[in-house]
Length: 260
Image (cartoon, rainbow, N blue to C red; front, side, top):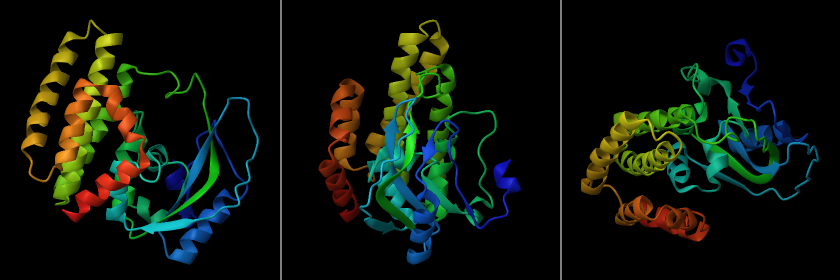
């Protein structure tokens, strides 16, 4: 509704339980203007449910990326996985939404749209300043933990894989196929733990994982290290979570992949 009602040149989305720095809009707008960007993004700070403090971060390092490069960054979690994955913490030129809308009646709408917005942008500017304050609320969608509605996210990840395939982005398609298999395994574990009676759903997820895993392992565009990490994730999930948090390794994986 907001997109349809908007008349300005830029759009920004702020979750109702979060708050922003007074300079959030002006800083991101300046980044767009000074660097000819169609999108600007900042870092965020997690705060408690009753916190309202504004943290003043004077450091302002700005890096710019092409839309395609940001899609690779997005996979590797550079500069920050959550900041890359969400719709908030950003300022967009409204024209980016000329054909993009959020899915109706679904949760995890960020997963359905974030990759498209990056891909169609010519340039994205990212500052290391923390200008968005993300409240951790126990009763929120993410705070409540896994439910069957969480599978909306998996549906959108599958759409993301197909999106890059349709665009002819064979390397991005290969990478996000890895992400889909890894995420499917995570959701399967949650379904088994919280919904043991959902036998048919478990069988469906197992079959999808098996089919797509074979495709990933056979795909010559899937980097060997990503295949290795995927197999590790399927067997020792916590190991891959730890590895994914090592920033230097994330950057090294990206450099090796792009050189090949």
